[in-house]
Amino acid sequence: MLVESLLPLGKLDPGLREPETPLDIKAFAQGAALAQEVGLDTVLVEETKDDPFQLLALGASSTSTIGLGTSVAMAFPRSPTVTAMSAWSLQKLSGGRFLLGLGSQVRAHVQRRFGLEWHPPAPWMRDYINAMRAVWDCWQNRTPLGFESKHYKLDVMVPLFDPGPIEHPRIPVHVAAIGPNMVGVAGEVADGVRLHPVCTTRFIDEKVLPALAKGAARGHRDVDDVEVCMKPLVGTAPDDPALQRVAETVRARVAFYLSTPSYRRTFQLHGWGDVAEQASVLSRQKRWEELPGLVTDEMLHTVATLGTHAEIGAKLRDRYASRVHRIEFSIPVADPDDAAVLGGILDELGGS
Image (cartoon, rainbow, N blue to C red; front, top):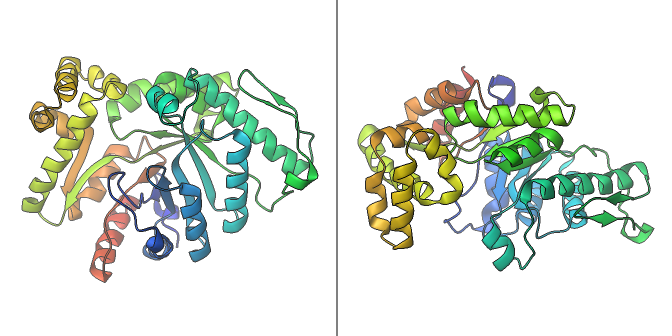
């Protein structure tokens, strides 16, 4: 039985890695097969050090039922047509199991890592998704390609470069977002919004969900048709002593988010804007070791969910079941005992 059928909060997606951790790409296919075996619904890949589309091709070849998706793939460095083809190929290879998550990246990376001109990202993303879907419509329905917007003009598709129809042409598109404009675009044109781990339950309730509803109304859509997805910041361990050690690692991660201006809106909502300013100063001065000291226990437990393996499933369920359709959860699985632990957490998240 698929775990999805047991989950009021939707689906469980394991991120198979942390951004800082090198990934053994040769073992990815085996990892995807293991995720399918233990009962997870989707394998997601972030675009950091490896091309996510290539990794998911490996995952598609080693699995048969589990979903496969990009947690975020960078949209703007790729043309909409290039991304459309990568997604089309993966959808064919996986038999309809692919989910396309897109991210915009911040100005400095768009300009100085990818060498592109900067544009306001929300309207750019709207045009990007609509252009990509125009390409898919051309391939699937033989509609002449004719898309024009502020950012893109697409009107050439010759037979040599047209892959033609596929069996499962409906590819879900999710957008990574935290600010109201991009959340609104997700509600207007996407199938889901992928929230940053720093989003607290209060931030989701007061900022994300209203912006999502506003965007859906602008697109004449039902907001309930737009999935809310999140990989929460989680700290878990087998027992309390180990959890205390893990908690300090999580505190350091919260401190990093605290120091990053892009995420300040969450901390400001809780009245911690001044602390976030202090953290930014320490960050600019490269006083990294002092950052965790700014994160109080209240801040830690508001941003992150902490609990032993026996507790964490219920805690995540209590916190997110009424707010999130898909939740990402990672735990290392090196042997059958680890797999059993993960299975127990999945059961708890599912309420069984």
